[in-house]
Length: 401
Image (cartoon, rainbow, N blue to C red):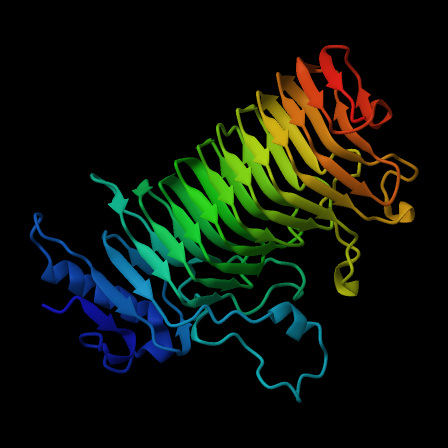
């Protein structure tokens, strides 16, 4: 029994004319059907590897994965900027135009949004599925190439799952790159996810997952990283660049760690908490806020002004410590006009801890602002007394000397 399949060597029974170049989705679905037929024994289902060699492959039919222990892999993430190409004008002298390596072109003529859908009912939940080393390309946006919208999703994991992995992948020009609903021990590592409306979304609930060592850049319409009802999410070692409406957005999430990342943003709300979030750690990161520099996108923003805070906290017992925050925005570009920008806003919550943060700014800023609904906040060595603004008396301050 072979457990290794090459999409270029597979023939769909009864449809010899449908090749991987013509519709890789139909080919992979046929391979998965063969895996299920060859592995009927409940006690022995080793799964399979589906290999995508370097090449350009149209995906017209959504792939539906309902088996565990499946690895779909190629030979390179193949990312290339479509945004630069679409905004460049004459490209007749360029060496190459499109993403390469193992390049899956999402055409979705079957009417489904997803290129890959992972879902199964019953028990147990799906486990140990891996996507590795190929490119998922949404091809174009509508109504303009700078809208970040086209209704296309790269990978959507729709049912509860355990120990899934996405590694070494490239995602480009998708409205939603990667969505996982009900993740347990999900591993997203070493990917290039950029020029997508939203990049990584953990929806529903998740636990013990990690998003590490990725290069990520979403559009102004969506999230670089979004997690709701997350328990123990690790966000570490990522380089997250513009222009997501937030870099990391946590909604009602607890005991998550955001450490050792480099963030660059064009908008406030780089770290954005929604709902009640508890015992989260934001430590040892580098934040840099600058204005949008790309002329075709200078008219767009995320709808938040500079009083919102680069870091916007809501919840209890969260810690923001030993970060470097760089703010370099011309006074004329600050909103509202004439306002003093906020670096860290504690909007609501109890016993939050702000300590030993270093701020480098080109203009006067409020390093920490406490809204009236906050209680028992501790602020240590994160600004002089004049750089701390409190609308409450229920806090402790040790100013930077």
